[in-house]
Image 1 (cartoon, helix red, strand yellow):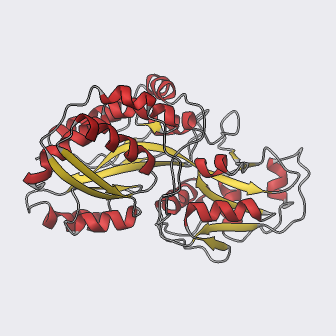
Image 2: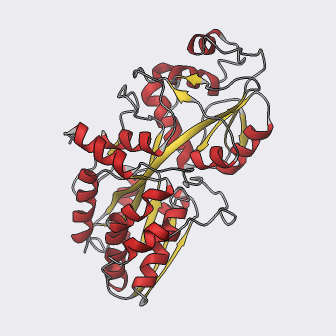
Image 3: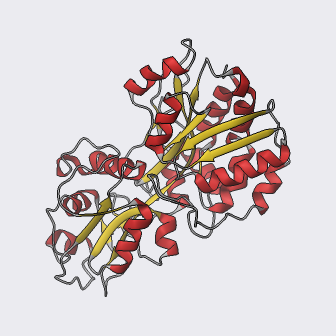
Length: 377
């Protein structure tokens, strides 16, 4: 279905995401986030008072590290309100989290990419033979394109130009395509050093989905968690890519906005055809999600983003993280706790985290998420 009442949704999304500070989304692959700063919990502690506990139990979950800081707050608040439940979420990366869920090792998984048809088919075994895994969108945020070009600020690029850069077709910073988008910039003849992820990553998957959706034939690859284009340089995790961009003159790379903010790395504004180039921000990511289509069938709420959007203020390089759970056939020992925890994070947990820089899921989509959680069995 196509979400309607766009202006209302956008207004709600922008209000929910009007935050200051850096995005705390962390890398979506195998990054080690043990050194990341802990989110403040003042606002979210207030939300914890409205938690309705499910049955007691021990929940094991794993997956996306993009939501790791959010999960840290959610788990702390839920376990404080519901001391009979223990929750252990491991940020193993989206791919590993889905694999562990499909092996029956966890109650739910976090993933920055929706399940593929073969994974849904495989999930019927772990979902008791009566159900299958579904995608529940929980949180979003922008993927920034950071750059290090001495003497150049306020860089603007569009999808075809980004595709040519990361596909090795544009190799100098003073290339005519870049100059056309930045007529007042003094672009050097420095060679472009394009960095991508060396590990399988939801960040890569979402970055290349954007190139596929907005750059057309300039990005002739099928996409996925593994980088497919030839050439360029690679680094482990978003933290590794950001570190390389920070220290390498002439470089460019993609990573969650928090890394750009923490490293004082300038980020590209995207020329989408809107009235102004769009900056990477939580507000602008929420505007992008508000115009998404729900493309999953049944209780699956996987989203399709319009990467070719020209809507003012909608940042097209936006990531959505899903919680993956069985619609039916969940383990009885953990079902009550799973429903209780997921209900909280789709409810007051969204409000509690808005001040941390995440892009909350817009109200109309989120209402469907909460209804689906209620029906889990």
